Structure formats: structure tokens, C-alpha cells
Image (cartoon, rainbow, N blue to C red; front, side, top):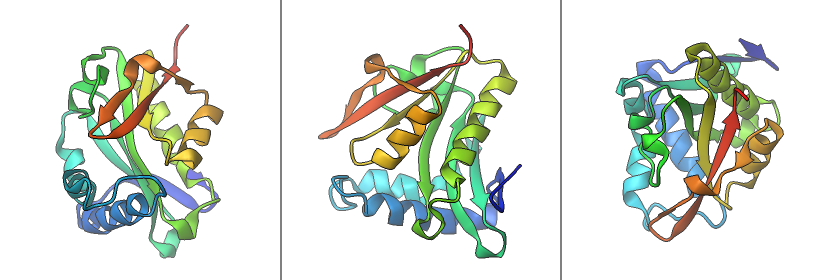
Length: 176
């Protein structure tokens, strides 16, 4: 799948460390988002992003920008039991999940985030799932706006607190 000179594909094991650094760099610079010192466990999870590929029915997808390297990444969950969030999301059936979208600032505006999210939606449709859920925060307004443009709607039943951080749930219905 190509979008604006981007290729969306599965993460290769040798890219795990680079994608982990990208994730940590992106999340740690979000204004209003907890720092690595405030939530060290969360940042350890981001740094070890490649480990998600070993979870049941999960895939780590990347946007590759040709010779420019990794433009970003996202994690798709075909089994919500492996999703790993607070709240009720991990108990949902007939559902796919999306987590941890991050785009390298050098590649923003090329459609990488949209392409990665759409790839996850396509995976959910291929599984025959009736919905896709995700979570975001106030600090992630660019992603929040993207999800709304893709048709995701706020779902307060999915909200939860991550330590002192309010996390907001979104849902995209794939069937009426």
C-alpha cells in the first residue's frame, strides 16, 4: 500500500529499536503529556514497541518513507485481550484496537498517520470485526482530529485515567 511515497508494512525486527526511539521522542515532546520521569513505565513500553508484534493477533505497522527511513508507526490489535489499556476496552468482543500512533516530525503532513490508521481499519474489516476502538489524550490533538475525520466518535464508556492523565475513548462502527 503506497501513499505519498510511503509504504505501509509490518515492522521488521531490526527496526524495533529505531521505532521505539521515534515513539519516545514523539510522545515526550507532546505539550501537556506526562514526561518520561512522570510515567517511566509508559516510556519503557514505547521504547519496546516491537514487543507488541509478539502479542496474540497484534501487528506493529510502520510507514516507510523510501530511503528516508521510518516515518512512523502504529499498533493494531485483532484481539482486545492484548490491547493493554485501562477501562473496559480489553473485554470488548467483535472489536479491533489501535494504539500508539506516532509520526516523525520530519514526515508530518505526508498522510502517514492517516495511512497507518486506515491500514488498521482495513485489517479490522478483513477480520470481520464490527468496530475499531482507540484511545487518545488532550495533548494529542493532531491525532484526535485525524480520528474524527476518519469517522471515529467519542465513546465515554471507554474513557479511563492513566495515573493522573485522562484518556479518552473513540469508536468506529464498521457495521450498522
